[in-house]
Length: 218
Image 1 (cartoon, helix red, strand yellow):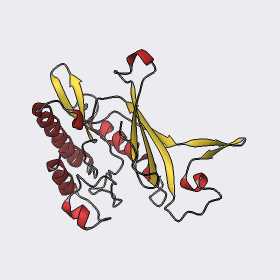
Image 2 (cartoon, rainbow, N blue to C red):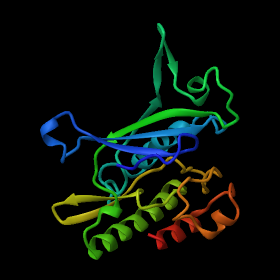
Image 3 (spheres, one colour):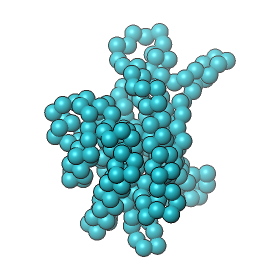
Image 4 (cartoon, helix red, strand yellow):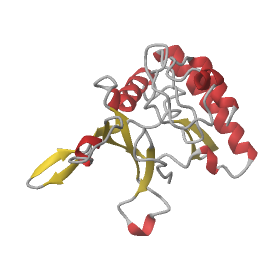
């Protein structure tokens, strides 16, 4: 769905998958493929799963926001076959025997239930307005209830979910989020929707104000 621009760097690729070749237009799951920094904390590669677990446990199944966030995700490392053994896929193992001065990255995949296409696939202005409004309410609820800042608002982070009442916006892509009142300082690769503060000071801790500003650029 979204191609990686570079092998080195935290680039994410998204794949819509189905178990039925006759229903490719109705995917069952979304697979997110990323290369995360090895210099981050030990739980960073599963941050999205941890944050979504926190959010869903807080809001439960009966809250008005229970379907405003992406479903629970399952994350883990990718292993490759190397002779008779399975080796964790990293830039170190990929460049074995070669000289590489680039940062060490770890290959991770996240799988979650399919929700819908990103807001960039909206077909009219009304869908965009509804989806952004829902996302803003979800952002505020996540901060108020879970002290969580998203940190990576983009046109891929807001999904269009089809319901009986029409389109609903769903907030996704929490792999830069942190339930501590601010977001991790690692900068997202996609610059188009970052706040001015984030662009002027790469690596600076981002707050909810950066999320609100990013919304304006959608």
